[in-house]
Length: 354
Length: 188
Ligand SMILES: [Zn+2]
Ligand SMILES: [Zn+2]
Image (cartoon, rainbow over all chains, first blue to last red; front, top):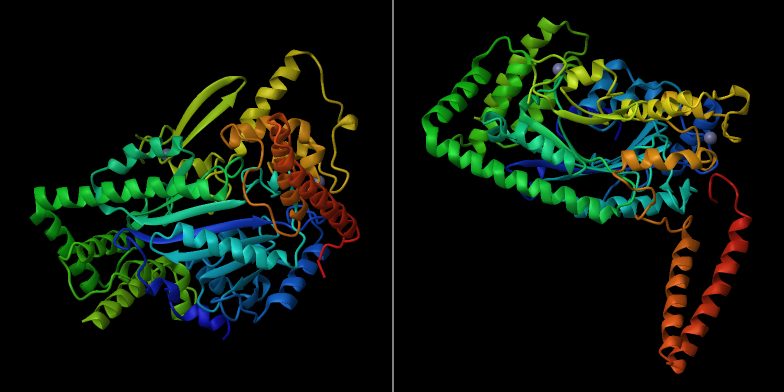
């Protein structure tokens, strides 16, 4: 297995499994920020120190396995092309910040892409673990076990009063950011989501779109995550997040039913027109593609469209990002060239379903 | 709710800012938040940089009105990484673990602001690094228990607990001796 393995497929192997509430929740993620004790944080550290950390991870963990997460691949960011970096970012295997780093930045990614460890990002160590659907507790338990495994060899920066010490004061304590990726087309259509956001913010949680520039959530895909990391145990942070996610699921389901009852034909029209656009376009911008993909996915979830797999949304959202398109074309593309290739890849993918 | 900056996109981010002691609510879209420096990079979704700046403005406002000025030479500086408190304010990031101790006296208001009133960790204690802490917490529980038993004159059970305390204390001492030898960054 090599880097190529991560580059070939737009959707990670673990995404093919269906998790709980998969009609609305795409994935759950736990991220833990950790640092070495007695080492300056990356923002201020000498290249020499960071290089020592990079080498330590390569030496200790390359091609190792932890439980079901087999054969970790070790990737130094400086060895990647610009296109390879954007593909890893688009697949959420590394962060945009890590991709921008030169020098000793690296990543350790499990063969099934469920676990990735970013090395020398804002903190020395950032552990990320993904689960399909709504599985926060399971993801947390796995992340904490993985954390124990790393701690066997790493002396963590930990303080009795402040907890895990991180470079940014917003991460101190648990160092944990838990997040849930949700497809909320009905709440977006009815603009209910905008009204719910301030209330969710008040609970110490953040809602944001993950695709697209600016505030609009491209593809109606939203990420809900905790803001507070200090003064609350991991399990309680997860509980609070989960209860809000459950409420959003309930509201989204109700909104879907209401739209279907009140204007079923309008909704059906919108869904099938979107499918038509995706099937026959020769040029398509990412915004339009995302809107249509969201509608088609809603159609699948409501049973209006049959014989197309649910994964079409996650898969094509990633596959039609600039990095992936250019990886596919094996060259840099202008925006208009990308719109042509995007349309052609989507057509191809939909034909494959028939 | 529309964004208060561009009045076009919906406001998806909400901040409370404290500038010179005045609290203001900011309702803003992500594009404007990025432009105005609320967001450092998209991964985090929000940055408390401005929030911190707001808080510090509040602080320096007080200092200013009292007519004092911080002498650069006397400024608190981390002995380990060299970061000064004003540099920390500027970048909003710590330079190393020691910074948390160095700037400790000034951190509680910041943590309270960022973590809705909290200043102390209540989550995971790492197995190795926090090994003693587990034992110390257990010890505190036993000691409380012992006191309760003595007050209730349950001396037989108190004796059992006293033995447990002795054993635990010996354990902690042994562990401390062992750990004091291990100062390497990479644990062997
Ligand atoms: Zn705006
Ligand atoms: Zn320091």
